[in-house]
Amino acid sequence: MKKIYKYIALIVTPLCLMITACDEDLPKNVESNDFTILESISIVNAGLNGDSTVMGKVDEIAKKVSFPSLKEGTVLDKMRFEVKLSQGAQMDAETYDFTMNEGDRKKSRILTVSNGKRYREYMATISYPQFGADFSPQNSRIFDYSSNPLGQDMYPDFGAMSTRSAAFDGEHALIVSRLAESSLHLLKLEDIIANKAAPNKINLDRTGIAGGTYTISSGALAHKHIYVCNLTTAFATSPLKLYHWESPSATPQLILEVKALEGAGARYGDNMSVNIDEKGNGYIFFGDLASTRMLRFEVANFTEVSATPKIISLQASAPEKDLGAWMTYNQVPGTSNYLNTSYASPIMLVDADKNVIYTMKATAGIPLQCVDARILEFNNERYLLATTARRAEPNPFPTVYIYNISNGETIQDALENLDNRETIEPVFSFSLNGLNNGAPGTNTGWAIVDSKLYVFGSSANAGFAVFEFPENAD
Image 1 (tube, rainbow, N blue to C red):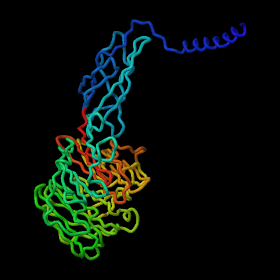
Image 2 (image 1 turned 180 degrees about the vertical axis):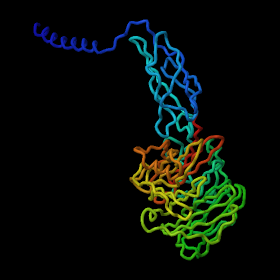
Image 3 (image 1 turned 135 degrees about the horizontal axis):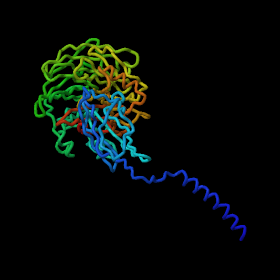
């Protein structure tokens, strides 16, 4: 029995010492009548001239302070406040530094109110007007017709590598499948949203469409006009053809037929990039399967296509030799520059003659497999949009990526800044899943509808999805 007591004493004594030590380390309530409540607060040196007052809001329960958005030009490193505090209380500083990192539009820091031995901390946040899109899950919507298991079933036309081209303009999605008669069709955005896409699809008239290894292969939408080309492997036996529909109910018009083109190579129609402005003027680009040449056709008034294209020779070295069947050539809005991309080639900033201005780093945080890259602007912010193609493992599943590239005066500046970030993270990404695909035709699209940003991404054997993002709210 003595041994038991002895062992109990050996156990209890250290426990008592530990409890005593812990008790000494715990903060104790300070008995005091000195209160530390922040009753009200205002910024008194806001605005470009530092003479504006902005009243804040105090959330005493959450211990947070917020303000309406400040005007651009407000001095942030010496922010002064006018406050109403508990009697005898004081702030911990006369001015506060709210300097933001480059590209940021919001800053938070702690304000401390003290009174005698007591103090209380509040998290204060100041911001400029919020631009761009709200990519948060609670405010965005996804209309998923892909292989992602979290959504509904994959749109059936994307199976068996049949749909290698799709497009989107904010009103319709264009589905260009190589399968049956009804495979060339439009889906209304409103039907996509309402989950009525397949039952309400709009089949395009195919009168006069004939010829080619495949009679339809690639398509595009431009200012409510519809363009579809065939696939040719030899001009002499199957001319390259381009068709135009003025509206969804129109009869197709053959606007281009190339029966012979010396020095042009072979096999065109795996890809087609239509870059036409609101007046119907611009260029249409085709890249050959072998990555040796590109054809650039000039377009006027939507349907007047030059009979003889400019033949652009591609270099026999990387990255141009890797462009292949999935190359795309998309104009940067408001500029004469384009983004040239492909499954196995990094994103290149080029001009209309394929002169390379800047090539993004192949080792950057942007997957090499990004296809159909586009620059979009929404609510005073600029973004890079792309969807990856999955030809084989270990390539990632087809995924839609959006990067904020607002930082930079020019597009080249913006791409270089993105390349040089310590950590490159998209503001949004969504996996379409899908099987390995020997012909991963992959597309993107975007539009602004009723002050909302809509983004489209698709890939053969994976399906498509449309994403809705509202404007960022202050």
